Amino acid sequence: MHIVLDFDKLLETIKRLHQRINERFACSRLNLVASELAEMAEKSSEDIAWINKPNLWLRLGVAILIALMAWSAYLTWPEFQVHKGQMTQVLMLQVGESIFNLLLLVAAGIFFLFSMENRIKRSRLIRSLHRLREIAHIVDMLQLTKDPYYSAGLGQKTASSPDRDMTIYELQRYLDYCSEMLSLVGKLAALYVKHFPDPDVTSSVNEVEVLCTNLSRKIWQKIMIANSIEQKEGKDYNLIVGD
Image (tube, rainbow, N blue to C red; front, side, top):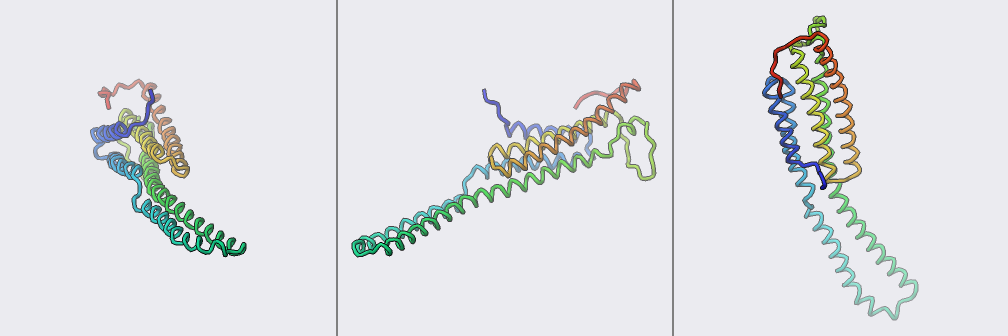
């Protein structure tokens, strides 16, 4: 049995995460980021469909080049047959060189059109991957001021300190949502490589995945600190545990 990353399941997971964040942190900026990620995931289905669809105009250009080459050969062949017996070795070399240059030019044109199709697709995918990378950085920015010690009432605020009104449990859920979102960003990026195994796209996807993994590792350090504080103080928050 061959298990693959399914886009529909991934999209469903991203939408469900958005719903969970909306139910618990409806007014937070994290909810807005989750909404944008869900919209981008839906848009990525259009990107994937566009990747798998051939560019008919560019391929038509290739067909026209091949047809022009065949037509030129067809027009030149009768004249070559007429003067074949009168051609000197020098003239034969000149004709051969002309034919070789024509074939080389047509081959270069065909290669350019085919590579242009890949360049156009690559450019669009890398723009989408840049947006995913930006979302990952935004999630990291949102968790920067979330401090377990302040949520436990152990910190001392200053005049410039941000508002920290979450309980330990709420903070744990918030950070866990951030970690889940980063993981889903990496999985969404991996889908592009599946449908377009280009070296540049693969490199960009790897960068996004490494970034998400490193950012998630920092978040889980905070979650572990919050868990240790909660266990150490032995507080019962009487909260209903759930997603």
